[in-house]
Image 1 (cartoon, rainbow, N blue to C red):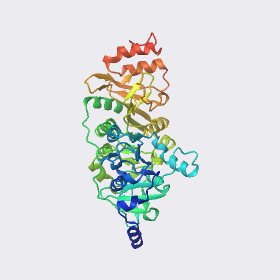
Image 2: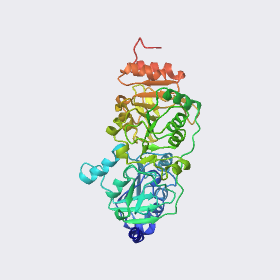
Image 3: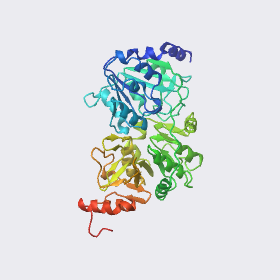
Image 4: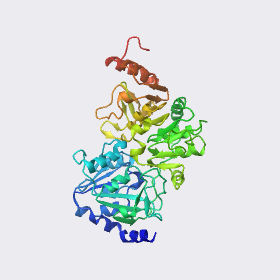
Length: 457
C-alpha cells in the first residue's frame, strides 16, 4: 500500500501542469457521460490562445458545460466531437461552430481502439495522444474505478500516449464485470479535482400515452425475461412500470443502467436468477440517472460494470435467452425504417447501441425487440404531426434498417414487421398510427405502390 501511495504522490499534479503536454494538432479522448473531466477541461480551455487544431472526442455530454466549447464558440482551436448527442450537445451545436456528431456503433467502440493499435490503415482516426477521465479515488491496491462509465475507458486509456485521471469523490466504486478499473502504475498523471456533483437525469412523470405503450409491451413479457432499456425517457418510464407489473425472476442486461433497474430490483421483480450467464447480477456498461441510483451502484455486488465490448457484442447478446430490447425512436416510415437520431439535418441523438440490441435480441432464443414511440408529436407552434410518416424529411437518418425491425409500438398497439412485405408493413404501421392521420397515410401508401386494393380501409 505504501508503494502505491508513493506512486500516487509522484504522479500527482495540478490540472494546469497536466495539460502542458497537450500540443497543437493533438487528438484527445475524454471518458463519456459523467466521466468527462472538469478541472482538466478548464485548464485546457485556458490554453486556447497558445494551441491550435485540438480534436476532442466525448459522448453524451452532460453538465457542466465544457469550457473548451464555451471559450471557443467559433471552433477556431477546439473541435468537439460527440458520439451520441444529448440535450446539452444540441444546445452547444446551436451556439458553437466547433461541435460535431461522430457516428459510431457503440458496441464496436473497443474495435475502433484495437484496430487503430493493430492496423492503423483500418482505423478511420488515429490513436489518441491523450486520454482524460474522472474516476473514483484510488483504493488500497492502487486501482482507480471508472464508476458510472466503464464503456471503453480501459482500452481508450492504454492505447493513448498520455493518461491523465481526475479524482472525484462523488463517483461510486462499481464492481465488475471486466475492465472496470485501471492501476496507478499504468497512468501518467493524476489530478485531484474539485469533486463536482454528478449530472443527474430528471425524473420523468409517465403520461397516459406512456402507460398505454407500456401496457402493449408488458403484454409480450413473461417471467424470466432479460431486460434491456435504451437511452431516452420512454424506456426508463417503461422500466418503472414493469417494476409494478408483478412479473417474476427478470434479468437485467443493458448498456445503460437507469433508475428503473433500481426500481425493478427493489420491487423484487428483477433478481437475475434465470439469466443464461452472470446469474444474480445486472450487467451494464454505463449509468445515468439520479443520486439514489448512484448510491445503489457503490460497492454493490448485485451489479456488474462491464466494458461495452462485453455488454453490446451481438453474438453475446444472441446467447442470452429471452432477451428483451426496449428502445425509443423519433419516427418510423411506412417502409418500417426507424429514425432515432435526427430531425432533418438537425442531430437529436445518436445510434448508440440500439442496433446492437435490436439485432442481438432477435437472435436470442425467445428474445424480442421493441421500438417505442408516441403516435404524434406537438411542434413548437402547437400543430400536431404524426410520428409514423410516409417518408423521412431530407437529411433525416435511418438508424435501424427495415430488415432489422421487430416490433414497433405506439399507444395504439404493437406490431411485428419481421418478414412482412411492403404492403403488409404499411397496413400494420397505419393501424397503430393516430386515427387522425390514417386516411392520409393510406393515400401516401397508394402513391408509393405499397397498398393493396384488398387492404383494410
